[in-house]
Image (cartoon, rainbow, N blue to C red; front, side, top):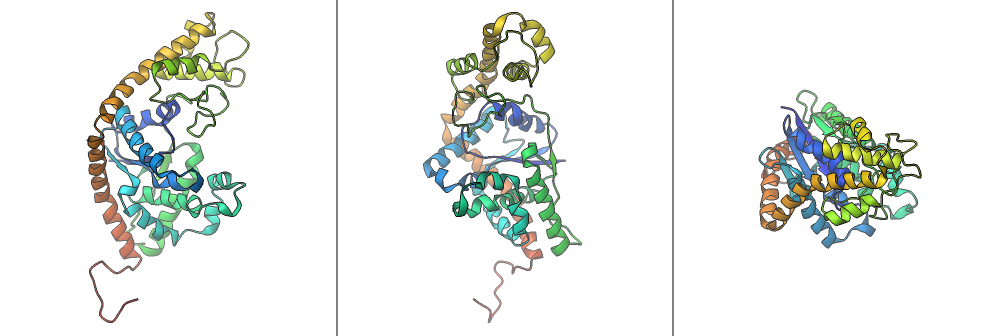
Length: 343
């Protein structure tokens, strides 16, 4: 069976864009693949100025709880926290030793996030694509669902895996070479206040972001205040009417209806009525998620047990992979003592 790996950073509360752009596919992929899903808390530590231990701990648990609430099934998938499986950090060091400084320096996201920071940029920010490669390669992932902005990182994972296999295990490859897949998003959700930008956890204002746990009143208020335009017609045109088009995509995803059908239904009735329909649909879409989240949050011990079980199952795959990699690189097996050799 095809194996899928994907991870999500606990760098902020999950929102409607995460849900419709990625998480609905995470849930759907459980029907056709063996899925390994990870809350990548180590990746959330790469900016020292933004790293608060208490916040990271809370967000990690919240992200895991939300994944369970949206439909990630621990009976069908492996769900765990990255730092609970030490093989990720150890495999990163092995891959660091074959990764090139030049190829990491060219990573687009490193260049973007390090711009203007000078010598204060953390080594973690520079190196996190190698950690991401380790995340993927440890599980022999065939497919990694990613957005176009992450394509370079999957290419790096393939390059490092292939380089390792060629140099250390040409006759019996250790790593499976993954391929990036781009599942169709249920909607390309943009910021409600700045519809030319994607809805994001890192936005400077949350007025344009619908979080999965926002209460219905707050959701309706944000959608009512969504930027549209000075005209009154309702039609889909990302260039001329980005705000209206964004709301149409959200409404289509939330109701399972086509955009063309929704345009016919709502054009001519004004933006107020249209926004009310979008708000109602989003509230109903998120209601079962919020109810399930409340039930899970009431028993955090059960969520922790689920994550501990997931980490144990993840290690059953990751540990043998790491052991083969270490052996291929010539490391002495644990427990073997050679007399006369030491530091």
